Image (cartoon, rainbow over all chains, first blue to last red; front, side, top):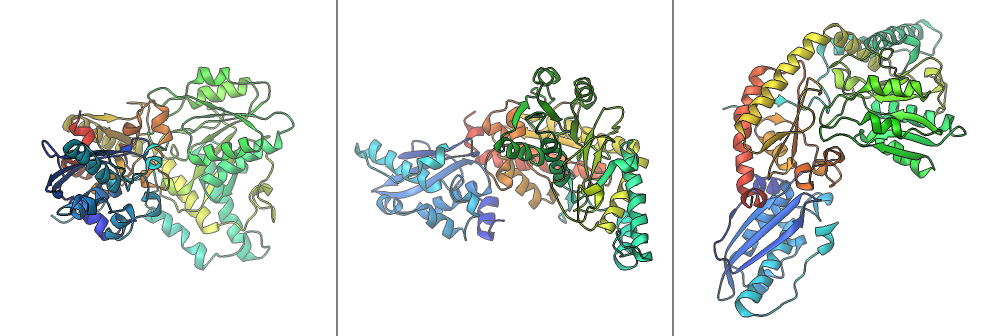
Length: 137
Length: 389
């Protein structure tokens, strides 16, 4: 059902945990689908220097969370905002079609964490790409 | 340590018993005739078919001519429910079922609803037992069928079938029950339990896949939904799966012979598992009724953990289990059975079903009890729900 990369990230998730006094936090998910994730970021000079996550959900949800932390770390926040859900799925060697929505929320969580960073540290409200329909249905 | 290969998913399907395979094989290469043929080859097949019919009937205290063979449990449910509905549509359009039926019944009922039939889905208690008072209150003048499962496939609760059968008989309404999970684990008696139609399948009792049966009490009339050569009393046209039926008969014979000893063995494993899990893992719970459940079924939930993750981790460790959470199957909705118990969404997504067979051992359960707490701990480390408690 899952690609070897998904299984690897599921079994050995990278960057699990919480960042104390984070520069941004993003939480997405919906218990109906059984997925809930929170992404924490530490930012220095607009560069994401640390990312951590916690996720309640299926293997796909855990693997996408783990993958997004690896993809975001070291990136400029504006570059990280360009990471899409499709990028995450592609880097994981694909996801089963049924898992492309509910369980593929990590990019949204990251975007919300960056939005939080802009608000908290720069006092700026920014628009970010999220998929509310996948969080509520 | 070498990774074990332990099968704890016997409500999904079972190993075919070696004696069953042995009984079936000659019907592929020696006695391969069409049971409808007049020649010796055909008559050999016909004889095997009828002998097997008697064995299946004996398991549920029915007469052989009250059994038809089908392609499986889902097919039996469809033939029974649609057969009664279509046959009686001039008499009435109301059908009563429960909120925790298997999809084979639930989706058949929903399909009939789209055709204009009216359904009542009777609720269950928080322990998963059908409310018989509500069931009786929901009977109308135009009620043509009551269909309630014998025992539940996810949480293993045994339903008050005899009581429902009495209610149905008192009101003169045909009563169908899906007994796919009960067969071979608890006693089924269609006469004592006032059952008019009953669904069975071979692969849940160490028989082959693709063969099932429907018990139809003498005098109950069904409209066929499958048309063709008129096999199985015109209700399931199609050349009989003779080898499969022979395997089914053999599986029923073994199940009937050792019913109580096997049930005791499985109950011992179940109790060991339930007591061990609840004692060793904090915030772990048993879903369903503590005692009124199939001897082979344990269904747990663990706060903060999603079921599919747990099943995949256990698979990595060598244990085949399953989850009521549909995340593991084709849909993403949480289990309708667990939701019917009144659980919250995140709880309903976190179930683990462990189902035993007569082939499992105490040593396997002990190995499972050694493995599970570590896996639950690892998944909880990742979980925001656990850490925010």
